[in-house]
Image 1: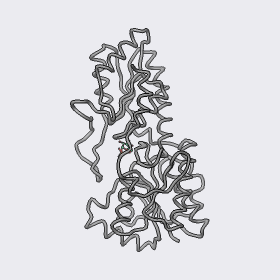
Image 2: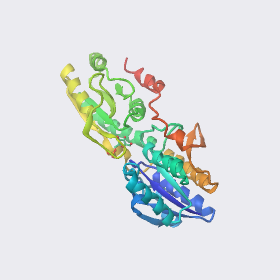
Image 3: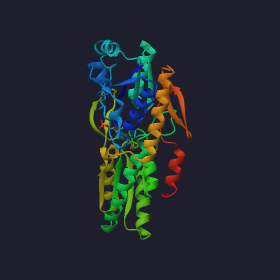
Image 4: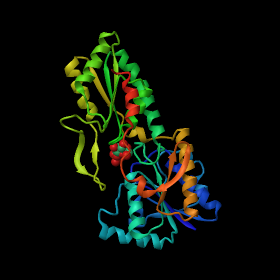
Length: 343
Ligand code: F6P
């Protein structure tokens, strides 16, 4: 059996652990793997290389993806790219493809299986933790640990200067990263896309904190947080191949409004891609390995059109269709726990 592997969309810590686990499972059954490079672009343009099991030695500890990634969407130019995808899949002699990605990458895998009968198995990944069916995605734990470490550092300088520090996190349209890291760093306010920004309340909380003798504060803002009147803040009007605008800048807007309304010196730090970089946490390595082994099993059993997911503590099989059905926004029970500290 010859199995292709690709990683698509924004990278995240743990991708290499999945690659290693799939390669091991397939090799244990006497099969071999081919690395499709740079996501779906690799299949459109036939950029690939054999993936030997000895190449996966030690990659569990590496961030990023040894296969490279892109946001190429073959359904954007279907007449040009879909025949190439099918022809290259055939030319490589593949029996199956394991697509490791978020909703965009898995959405393509789903459509290639549904519309063209291509043998696809999906593995969910994203630092945003916004995929349906799977309770947590690998990459998320590493990301919130990075944010936590960064804010722990920011706290000391913020306190020294009696400032307000606004920290902008990633997460796109879901507030998981901001909410979990906000709880972990004892943020004085957390803003997430699921709850419209209430600036009068933010300002009231920060003023009351100052008046009670606490002369600095930390505010964590998710990049997708929305103002009730103006909505989200975006970096540019252009959209990528999957129709997404680039988010960013809300932290600065919030910081300016806080400083103007309170008179407290306020700074903003945008953590950006630091949240996706570097080695995965132990939790993410273990989760990614378990998902990779299970995806390898699905391939061996020829259970295509499926993906693996975390349900509670168990790795389960589900359909690609259910995995990409909608965005999993933040469960507001977590937000209410964060909000208990900024009443
Ligand atoms: O989906 C992962 C993510 O890191 C989002 O949190 C963020 O909005 C986006 O990707 C950034 O994408 P890019 O790496 O293309 O700038």
